[in-house]
Image 1: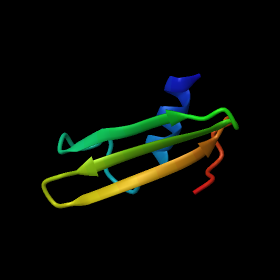
Image 2: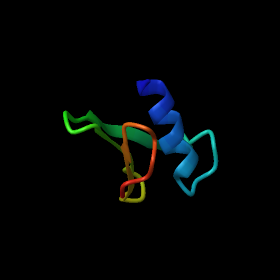
Image 3: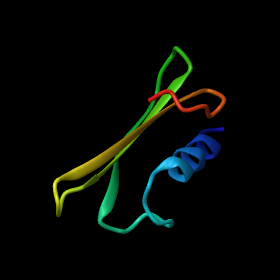
Image 4: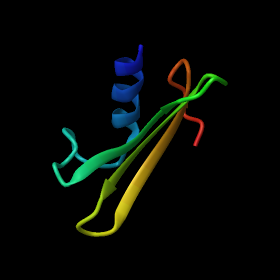
Length: 61
Protein backbone atom coordinates (compact mmCIF):
# COMPACT_ATOMS: atom_id res chain seq x y z
CA UNK A 1 0.00 0.00 0.00
CA UNK A 2 2.86 2.40 0.77
CA UNK A 3 4.26 2.01 -2.75
CA UNK A 4 0.84 2.72 -4.26
CA UNK A 5 0.51 5.93 -2.24
CA UNK A 6 4.01 7.03 -3.21
CA UNK A 7 3.21 6.45 -6.91
CA UNK A 8 -0.04 8.41 -6.49
CA UNK A 9 1.86 11.32 -4.91
CA UNK A 10 4.34 11.32 -7.79
CA UNK A 11 1.48 11.38 -10.30
CA UNK A 12 0.24 14.64 -8.74
CA UNK A 13 3.50 16.61 -8.75
CA UNK A 14 3.94 19.09 -11.62
CA UNK A 15 7.32 17.69 -12.70
CA UNK A 16 8.30 15.28 -15.44
CA UNK A 17 8.34 11.62 -14.50
CA UNK A 18 10.46 9.95 -13.59
CA UNK A 19 11.32 12.66 -11.10
CA UNK A 20 14.66 14.29 -12.00
CA UNK A 21 17.66 12.93 -10.11
CA UNK A 22 18.35 16.24 -8.39
CA UNK A 23 15.07 15.87 -6.43
CA UNK A 24 15.61 13.68 -3.37
CA UNK A 25 12.88 12.25 -1.15
CA UNK A 26 13.44 13.86 2.25
CA UNK A 27 10.17 13.01 4.05
CA UNK A 28 8.08 9.86 3.79
CA UNK A 29 5.79 9.91 6.81
CA UNK A 30 2.84 7.64 7.50
CA UNK A 31 0.79 8.97 10.43
CA UNK A 32 -1.61 7.20 12.74
CA UNK A 33 -4.51 9.38 11.54
CA UNK A 34 -4.38 7.72 8.11
CA UNK A 35 -2.42 10.45 6.32
CA UNK A 36 0.80 10.20 4.41
CA UNK A 37 3.23 13.00 3.54
CA UNK A 38 5.92 12.89 0.88
CA UNK A 39 8.37 15.72 0.39
CA UNK A 40 11.09 16.03 -2.24
CA UNK A 41 13.84 18.65 -2.30
CA UNK A 42 16.08 20.04 -5.00
CA UNK A 43 19.03 21.31 -3.00
CA UNK A 44 20.72 22.68 -6.14
CA UNK A 45 18.03 25.33 -6.57
CA UNK A 46 16.63 25.48 -3.01
CA UNK A 47 13.23 24.13 -4.10
CA UNK A 48 10.93 21.55 -2.57
CA UNK A 49 7.49 20.07 -3.07
CA UNK A 50 5.25 18.28 -0.64
CA UNK A 51 2.19 16.12 -1.21
CA UNK A 52 -0.18 15.02 1.56
CA UNK A 53 -2.63 12.19 0.86
CA UNK A 54 -5.26 10.36 2.87
CA UNK A 55 -4.99 6.59 3.18
CA UNK A 56 -6.97 6.07 -0.04
CA UNK A 57 -4.76 8.37 -2.13
CA UNK A 58 -6.94 11.49 -2.14
CA UNK A 59 -5.04 14.78 -2.12
CA UNK A 60 -5.18 16.55 1.25
CA UNK A 61 -2.65 19.37 0.68
